[in-house]
Length: 120
Image (cartoon, rainbow, N blue to C red; front, side, top):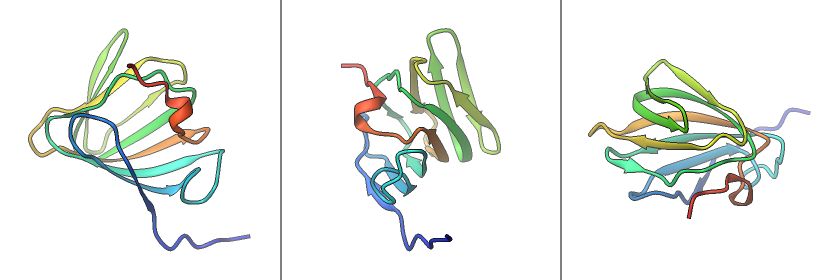
């Protein structure tokens, strides 16, 4: 059965600066534990704590640059590029450029505060 989603839910973010997270599908907006799909907008200079999530995360950058750091490598993901981070892999996201970044994140299974396992 098709279902129209009227609007996303704004989710509180982690990090040194406020980031806008608009969850369209997921545990909060649609009560879906299987997948979360959110549009993120992070300001320049934003950095979040490292994490070892229990979900795969697929990210497509729409604007700006998203910096992705893992235990073994670092990437700058530019507009039009994408990255996948596998579950149980340590990762830290940031937006070092002054204009920040806008991107879409898809998590399988859905993101939750209990399964993101952020560094203390």
